[in-house]
View 1: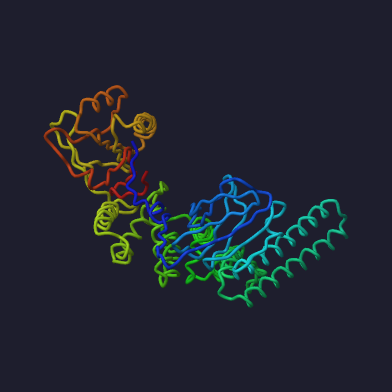
View 2: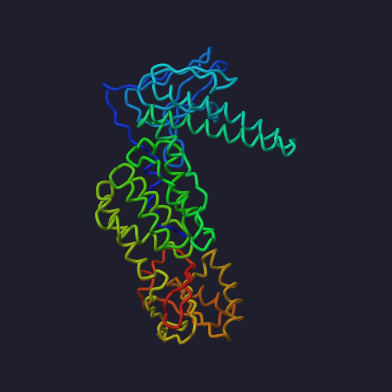
Length: 451
C-alpha cells in the first residue's frame, strides 16, 4: 500500500486566522434584486481555493447582511448563492454596501462606502463592454472579405490600445490600491518583435525567455492582500509548472527565485515556502524529491521557518530530508545487507556485479506490488541476458507469504529479506514509507532512475 508522509500545509494554511476583537466588527449590506428567501454565503479566496467565511439569509427584497464582531482580512471575496458565485467583492473596509440585480450583476452594480469596489466595478464595466464589442467583431470577421478583415483587425488593435490606456490611467490614479495591484498581478508581458542576430538569424527562444523574465514585472510581492485573491497561487504555479523546464535543477532555481521575491513579507514567504514544499513532497515525478530535499535543507533546516514550524515538525522534516538525501538520482545507493530465502546466507547489494541493477523493495501483501511484481518479472526475463540483474528485498519479517509468492511467480532473481532473527537498516536507509520502491542503478551502484 502506498503511504505518504505529508505536512498538510494546504489544510493548515487554508484555515486563515482572523484576529477577534470586540472593538472591531464588520457589516456588509448587499442587495441582489431578483433573489429572495434563500441562504447566501460570503466566501474568501485563499491560495488556490475559496472558503466560506459567513452565512446569512436573503429577505424577500433580495437584501442580505453579513455581520460579525471580528475583522475581515483585506482581499477578494465572493457572494455565493446555491453553490454559484454571483459576483466578487473587494474588501478594504469593514462596513459598506453594494446593490445590483440578476439581469447583469456587473453592469448594474452600485457601491457605497468602499473605494476599492468603486474602482473595481468601474474597471469591470469597462472591460465587459470592450470584451462584448471585441466578440462581436470576431463574429463579424468570420463572414468578412479580405478588405473588411483588415478593417476589423485595425479596430481590434485600436480597442486593445484603448483598454491598455484605460488600465494605465487606473493604475496611475489608484496606485497601491488592491484593485490596481490585482489587475497588475494578472497582467501578462507583451513580447516585443524578436530582434535579429548579427548574422540575420532569429532566436526562436527569444519570445519564451522574454515572457518568463518579465512575467512578474508588475507583481507587488509586498502586498499580502494578493494572497487572498485568485492570482497569487495561480501565477506562482504557472511559473514553476509551465515556464520552467521540468527537471529538478531548473525547478530548484525557480523556487529559489520565487522565495527570494517574497522573503521580505513574512505572510507571503510562509505561504510560498509551505505550498512549494507540500507540492514537491507529494510529487510522484521522478527526481522531484531533490526539490523537496533542497527546500528542507536550504530553508527549514536553516531556521527560516522557525516562527511557524514546531520543534516536532522540524524534527520530522530533518529526519525525512536526511533519509531522502542519499537516495537522490546521481548519488550512490546505500548498501543493503539481507538474508536469502533460507535465512542462512547474507546477500549484499554491493556484491552484485552487473551493468545495471534493479533494486526492488516490495511486499507480497501490497496491492500495488501484486500488480507490479509480475510485470517486473516479464521485463527481467527480456533483459537478464543483457547484463541486467534484480536485487529484490521483501519488506516483511514474516517470510512464509514472501517465499510462497516467489515460488508462485518463479522470481528467479536475487531474493533477500530481513527475518525473525535478523534486522538490517534498509528500511531507514531507503526511507521505506511505501512499497513497491524501484531503483535502477548503474554498475557503480549510482541511482539514475527511481520510482
